[in-house]
Image (cartoon, rainbow, N blue to C red; front, side, top):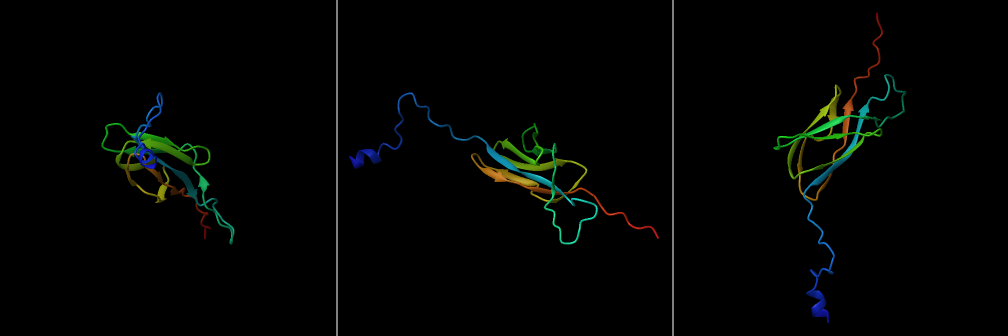
Length: 127
């Protein structure tokens, strides 16, 4: 019996559909911006403010661009066909941290977080 059971790993019950192999990969992450205020108090740390409704464009070899939009917490997720992509962030803010080139494999799950500089600065006192 053991020999028969070991050889039946590919057995499929009647009416049961075989699970398809994944044809895309998932990229997900969070986008935040810093600083959190023009003047931050000494000793306080800010991990960044979420950036809602931000568009991230994934430009690959296909003629169409795949887009992701962040939610109110700065989170996003997008399914991408296998391949190489350049990530373009549609904002006035400067990218400080995060990958701008991604290679996606079928069935993969990639985490790509981004930190943006929002340009908030303390005013300089006039002399």
